[in-house]
Length: 97
Length: 360
Ligand code: SF4
Ligand code: SF4
Image (cartoon, rainbow over all chains, first blue to last red; front, side, top):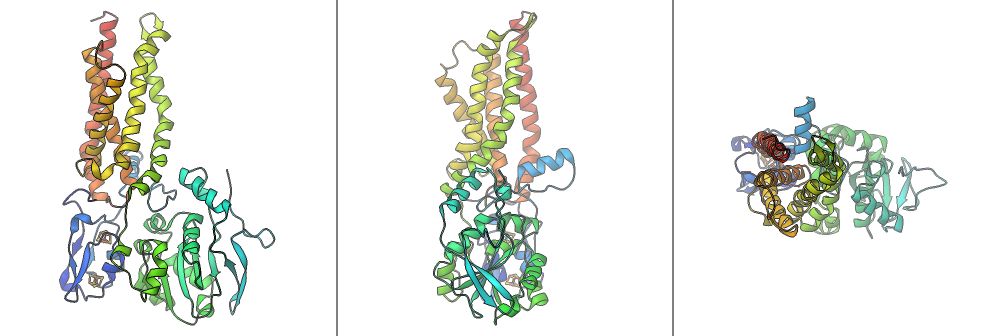
């Protein structure tokens, strides 16, 4: 399953990549793959902007705008102001449940 | 219903079976089996009956005959997360470090930052983990990576973080493979069952608003120059009430469950398509368009698919693959359309009423 194309804010600066492999280890959508001892951005449209890769790349080779991808939270923030915040109440594997 | 599981020595919960002595004091040992209470708790928390209180006390626990060399697995203090981990560790000797995430599951808590670097560092020191185990390895659920910087944990505690599989049930295979994940293990899935399980939490909140919709519909249709006519309210309003339920069904149930089979990637589009289909089917079931005014028909086919679309868009908050930028884009296009559609359909109904009253 893929979400909208060409919307993810993920950016990868391969010149900074040391090939440590963390991004591959943490990405839940297989956006990165190791090839020739470097990370490769293989499918940006799969990126859900969770931010795990950027948070764990010690070499600042990845940036991404993260935030809640939750319509209810964004609508609430539009109506009541403030940053969108997810009213997570804990389902099995997802947010905002 | 408040069922906070209090951890007191005498009335220890059933999943505790004894303790293990460590240089850092006694650590409670937990069983890997689920009792009926655990099972029931899972079902109730899925339905949303009391999940905010479904919690275990944070801290260190032991599974099996955990020793100084045993692996340390980290999880959240949402009891369901904890239960899934201890069940996955059946037959193994291991430590489980539970972070205080305010009884929220790992992924969600990681997004909020409660399953985060600082909390992990804090629990490692509170549990005196470096005295309990001789090694310096700690295994986190992969989805915790959203909130935890492995490098910072290493710097601040000396522990090296490995992000294990997404699903706790893959832990034994991961360990057996020498702490290596297959690609499968690191991908988050979203099966039909996953989606089905989430639908009550889509339907519940929207159904709480349904009485308002019903009230407004009955009022609108009952309104007459001479006051409110109940017979008219029912006759005119009933199809709208049924269509409202149908739209909820389309947006909060059909769209999530059939997600990949509904065309388009946009949730608003998916919801609109299923909404259109279900609205049409509901109209057929109610005797088709015969006898309906063109004004009402237009209002119906404008409003209800849009309602379903709006409801389906809410599901972006529960999926495992939609990101903020995409949802923002959908809302930017969607919200003005929803508002226009609602206003226009309302005007159509009002126009119908005015005709009925022979004002126009
Ligand atoms: S985490 Fe950063 S440095 Fe490591 S492989 Fe990925 S991009 Fe390269
Ligand atoms: S932001 Fe999340 S989904 Fe996107 S590439 Fe990074 S880890 Fe993968």
